[in-house]
Structure formats: structure tokens, C-alpha cells
Image (cartoon, rainbow, N blue to C red; front, side):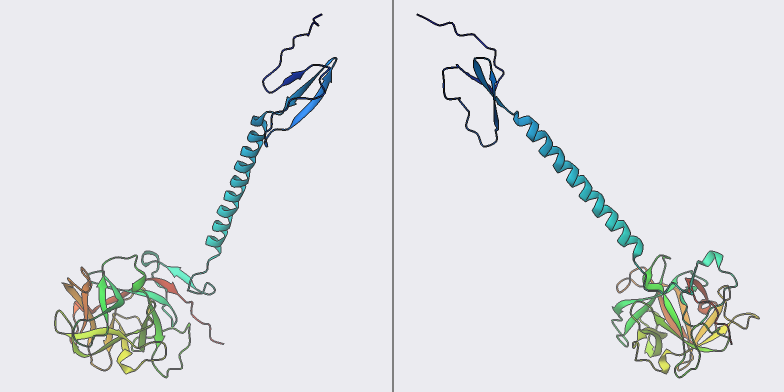
Amino acid sequence: MSHNVPEFYCEPGRTVASSGSQSVSRRKTSSTQTFSQPTGSTRTVYRAPESEFTFWHHNCFIAFFFIMAIGFFALAIFLFLSLDSDTPHSPTSSVSAASSEGVEITYGSVLKVMHEKSKVRLHSHEVPYGSGSGQQSVTGFPGVDDSNSYWIVKPQLESSAKQGDTIKSGTIIRLQHMRTRKWLHSHLHASPISGNLEVSCFGGETESDTGDHWKLTIEGSGKTWKQDQKFRLQHVDTGGYLHSHDKKYTRIAGGQQEVCGVREKRAENVWLAAEGVYLPVTESK
């Protein structure tokens, strides 16, 4: 005698067994969980959809990655904004050439020296002359945005002058190249292009001599060195004035002008203080 077995609709992933069966068919898979639920005379087995686990796993990974990316970006911004420059912030002020008329120049100021006639900046770099002394070369650089054109104004050797003191016309000063820490120097070697007195950079923080001494002479009626005043620098040992002209290098510093020393006053040895960071005048007590 045959028995009527009711028919059931089963969704994918379900298996059906009769009430008389003691075992339930399960698919063996490591990624599937099964749950049993009795239904009248039958028992059905449910399998949790794999897409549900995949959805949460995928989205959790995206959220974690997004949070990490935001964290790294915030850290990068913080480090960028907190970096300090090599120049002390406290009593200094940055001044551009266009907005600096009347600013006094003091010892310790960092500035660019501009050739009045050609507008190049006094420049040096770690490239030696191929002739003459073989010391670090000095040139006239045509661009404004160049870190190798900054010089620190220092007093002469054995001077009692202090940082922040003003500088009068006729004072002997030294100019220290900020990047290499060498001193603006001259001697009797011939300059490479014109054969005048060679101007170089020489020495270091603890190595300086009278070959680094330059006499500041302000043009006009001014008595104290200010940024808007024309001036000359005369080398004490050789008598040569710091000079430049339109003759340019083709090899050691292509496109840059020769800087040299000449013993006569000429229009080409007039200079101006340009862009820089100027220390304020120290108040006397």
C-alpha cells in the first residue's frame, strides 16, 4: 500500500526529509551554517546565504581602510604645519624688496644682495672655480627664488658688535653664505672671465681671516645701512669693489654672471639689500 507524501516547495539551499527519516542531509561546506526547524511532519534545514557574510565582511574592510586613510592624512597635515624653519621665528620679520623701504639692516639679518644695474642676486654654490684659487665660486644669479642667494650679515673679526646692532657707513662687515657657511672672500687671483680680482667663498664657522673683510660705504647722505639705500662693498685687503657685469658663464654656472672685484668706482659695483629676514634693532639699555 503506498503512502501519500506531501510535496513541499524548497528554496535553494534547503533539503527536505520525511518524518520517518532519522537523518538530515547537510551540505558539507566550511563557510555554511545550518539551522533545523520542525514543520509538522517534516523537518527542513536552512542554510544562511553566503552573500550576507560577504556583504558585511567587504563593507567592514572598506570602512577600516577609509578610517586609516583619514588618520594618515591628518597626521601628514599636522607634521607639515608643525615643521620649523632653520631661521628663528622670535624677533625676526620677513621683508620683501617691494615693501621694505626704510628697514634698518642689523647684524644677524639674513638677506639677498642685488646688483643695482643688472638686478642679479649675489650667489654661491658648492661648485669650485676651474682656475685661480679653485675655491667655491661666487656668481650673479638672475632668479629671485633661490636659496643659495642668502647671506648672513656678521661683524668683522674681534668686533664687540652684537646681533641686532645697526651698521653705519664705513663699517667693516663680513657676509656668510647661509647654505655653505663660507665667507664672501677675495684675493689677488684673477677672475675666470674678465681677469679682474677673483671673488670666492672660503673658510667656515670657525675659519675666517681678513680676506673676508668688506668695508660698507652707503651712497648718498644716509649714515645707517637701510634696505632702500645703494651701497658699495670694498675688499679691505685688495681694495677691490664687489662688482658684476653682463658677461656670463657657459660651463660652471651656465647663464649666471661673473662677480669679481675692481679697484675703480663704477656704476657696476653698486648694490642693494633685497629680500630677506631682518632682525629688529636691539634697544640699548
